[in-house]
Length: 110
Image (cartoon, rainbow, N blue to C red; front, side):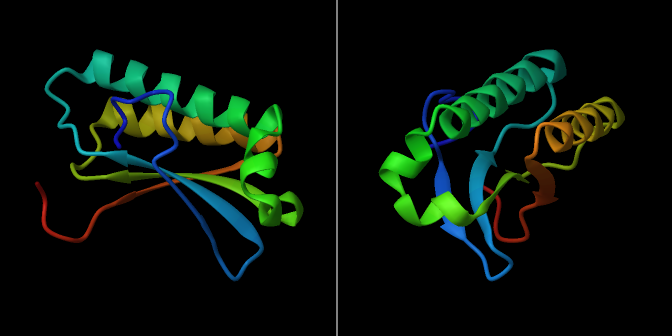
């Protein structure tokens, strides 16, 4: 499961703050920045559809009373353009009632 599989939900988890966390695993470097951003955009859009159409609640009934948080876990540092893109995605999703975050994976890279 990874950012390259746009129709697959990589991970779903729950936290103590009443969030259902839908995680995108992003192992790609930024050598093909435009294509990489398009993959992320497509994956995020599919995650939003998964929530909006209620499929998440059919598959995870405990998610019904939780706030959706889309989290991107990155194996590589963001470029300045990617950082700006992520900030715009965050603002857009928050306007739609979702939370959005991104963070650098702190374990061993592939």
